[in-house]
Structure formats: structure tokens, C-alpha cells
Length: 143
Ligand code: 4IP
Image 1 (cartoon, protein in one colour):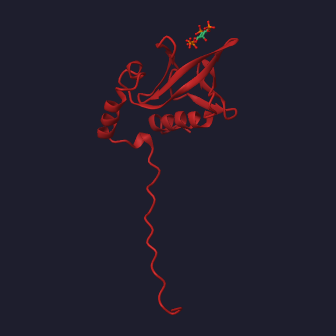
Image 2: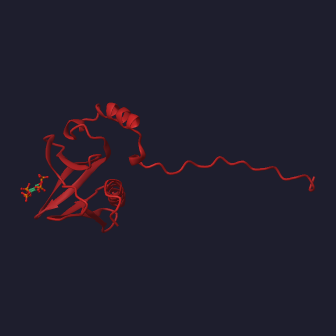
Image 3: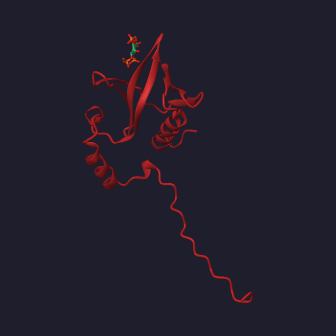
């Protein structure tokens, strides 16, 4: 038995990590259709939501809890979840930058403002990565 050839192990190659920005037009349409049942859909001008979650946005002394909506476009909208009103959006440009201070606190830099953000659930790194990935998708030549 020791002389019999060892079986050839065929392992299925794991699929490459597919990014949300690799979606085909048909898949985007499909997801947009499904997104219509999202209570925040009406705020995103029919753009596909890539990531959403509650973020405390600090301005002055106080932080306001907002539902952040990162979408294709790109856009980063924020909505007051109590009054269900759109409060604004972090302006996108090729100069947008992120910095995670720890698991909860992160900053988004735009030419005119540094946003102080806190993810109460501790997914600050994921937020930064999602924004960075989207930036690389729309502005691939930037470093
Ligand atoms: C407000 O503070 C809120 O933080 C606003 O956030 C913010 O606007 C205001 O900054 C700031 O003065 P108070 O609620 O304590 O008054 P939000 O719009 O989410 O309610 P933005 O949208 O710009 O962060 P100013 O400088 O924009 O007025």
C-alpha cells in the first residue's frame, strides 16, 4: 500500500475576494430592486447602498447619532434616524481621506472639514476600508 500512488488532491480554488464594486450592471439593478424595502432608500437618490450603520458625528461639544449611507455615486449621506430626515452628506472628492484612531473612532478628511466619527459598534476600520475601496474605485490613479 505504501507503494500505491498518493491520490491527487483536487481542491476547489476559493473564489477571489469579490468586491462590491465588481458588481455587474444587472447585479446592481437587482440589488437596487431589493433596496426599495430599506427604510433609508428614499434618501439615497436611487444610488446603491454599499454600507450603512449608525455613526455618532461630533461637531462642537455634542455628537449626533446619524444613519450613515455609503453609496455608489459616490455619496456618503447621513440621516437623522429619529426625525427620518436627511441632514447632509460628507462631500466626495479625490481628496477624501480616512483615518481610524481605534476600533470606534475614525476621521474623514475633506478639503474643508475633518469629520469626527464614532462607530458605537466598533467597526471603524471597516468604515475606513469601505470608503477607501470606493475611493480607489472612482479615483484609481490616486495613491
Ligand atoms: C449641529 O449641532 C449638529 O451637529 C449638525 O449635525 C451639524 O451640521 C452642525 O454643524 C452642528 O452645529 P447641534 O445639533 O448641537 O446644534 P447634523 O446636520 O447631523 O444634525 P453638519 O451636518 O454640518 O455636521 P454646522 O457647522 O454644519 O452648523
